[in-house]
Amino acid sequence: MICLFGGTFDPIHSGHLHAAIEVCEELGVDSIRLVLSARPAHRDVTSATIEQRWGMLQLACGDDERLLPDDGEVHRSGPSFTVATLAAMHEQHPDDSLVWVIGSDAYALLPQWYEWQRVASLASLVVLQRPGHDLELSPQMRAFTAARQVTELTDSSVGQVLVLASVMQSVSAEEIRTILAEGGSADHLLPAAVATYISQHGLYGGISDP
Image (cartoon, rainbow, N blue to C red):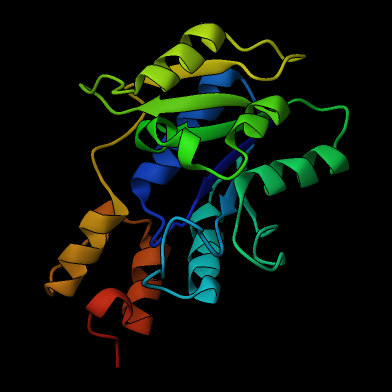
């Protein structure tokens, strides 16, 4: 089983790492790939460049061998589509089942993704639900979930949906960017190496180190 956790990681923060490690423990896998969404189709621009976000992702994963930074989308031209990433991974590892880890907010918007139904034909989905929040889904997504939801993933199957509650911390990249833009410190929400990188490069409106 190969687990992939995609994101723009703008910046990657402690909540991302906590969730990734929790997924490893919940699924009993040795590692999880953190896939940088290099050119996200759902956002016009990112605050940090691809190179900066990739640098931060590598630093964030450096202290835990379970966390594998994945730059597959960095080297592919055009918008970063999940279905293309999964198709490429399936081609490279045809004998392994794939799992795509996704936050509940993004999961609710799945029908807006490019070739979204094909995503479920290539991988099972692990949905990360924030503590104290119920899944708020459209009728279409409620039906999609009801037909596929399981309480435990079967390694040989695809298209399953497993909802994991209380594995997400209450922190977001947007919150961190706002704190930094206002001149505050977000060090408590970031891996130490990432906080240093942000300071050194003056990212997100912060003041760079001399």
